[in-house]
Amino acid sequence: EPDLQDLIEYLQTDDINLVVNSAYYIQHLCYNDEAVKGKIRELGGIPALVHLLNHDHYEVHRAAASCLRNVSFSKERDENKLAIAECDGIETLLRLLQRTPKDEVKELVLGVLWNLSSCEALKYRIIRLCLIIIVTTIIIPYSGWDKNLFQSGKPIPPIKWSTVFRNASGILRNLSSAGLEARREMRACAGLVDCFVWIVHAPIGKSDVDNKSVENSVCVLRNLSYRLEDEIDRELHPDAPLPNEEKKKDKVASEHPPSCFAGCGGMRKGKAPKDKKEPTVKRDPVEGVALLWQPEIVKPYLSIMAEASNPETLEGVAGALHNLMACDWRWAVVIRSAVRKDKGLPILVELLRIDNDPVVRAVATCLRNLAIDPRNKDLIGKYAMRDLVRRLPDPEKESDSERVSETVIGPILCAIHQVVNKSLDNGKQCREHGGFKKIVAISKNKERYSYKILKTANQVLMTLWALTALRNSLKKEEWE
Image (cartoon, rainbow, N blue to C red; front, side, top):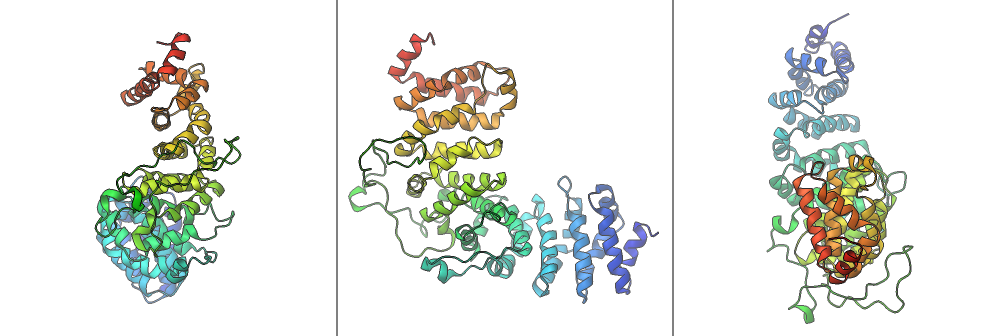
């Protein structure tokens, strides 16, 4: 039986059958075996495999790319990824991607690049070399994006999901987390944002909503929605317009929130007031990066959130929404209002109840940013406070303190703080659901919690204490 050294030598022969069989055997040997992957690198196997991508035969392409996909896969180590890049592997993979007519080879090539794109040291190089080509040759055609159809407002046909698109979207998801310059390059790439927005607007069946392509798409959109107000060219992309009569004011305020918590209890009767003070939104066709912050993105996000069970997808959508609402510009005001009008608050509250820390953390941050809007604040206090408080550790259950992570406690406290600030009704809701007792217990547990958590807990307590009527009630309960 040939050893690894023999197999690598066989890769360099003229016998196509021997080359193909050797590549597949190496692929088999290195599957989930970091030691073998390291040995392949040490014996010079990586340059030999990359060289085979230039071969004339499809079977050689398929075998070499399959092997490189396994060789490059590692969650812990980057040596093989860097070794592929060092022998011009990225450029060679890209040439093969452009010239092969075979979807199977495209899928494998993109799989290798997906692995390489997880390496921080290679992300900018991949952006520089691959971004435009991947978007123009894969993302646009395989998403089915039709600019005219999208701008017409007519129904989008169902997406034909493919592994080729899944792998390409996985690459862009990794690249979109590479920092400011990466986000700027990707936002500026023609068709990129349009295609992913098209994906989330398309009808997604229950059997598809949890697939990897949807997950990748919403995570790309989440990452590209980060710090939009600061990072885009504001001369090209102005703030949301205000109605003529409200140009001197940039606030949304009302003491009578409209009914939007379907199934969450009764609301006062009477017509909800018109949103006179909210910015109006221009309805001219929008394209490119500006699609990220249009209020029309909210409804498809909420639809995915209501149907999905994949935690990565749920976290991605909640993260996209809280990024859009975290800014100070008026588009954030528009999005906060759109979430309420599109019945998003009950969906978010429901997600506070699931057993997944990253999702709960993202949803809590989303609710905090939503509560900047006074109408949302009233509704969240009335219908979400119970669930927010429930996520905090119970001081009477020792296991609770160990079970609830600080990464969840912090965002929950911040959400409660925003909701109770200068709101007696919401402060009362917090106390009635046991929030005051829980937050006091957190503030006193210096051995378990970090300074940041203790500080946040004390800020919430001071905000509650500042509500005079609530303070008097708390004093009667012997709180000081």
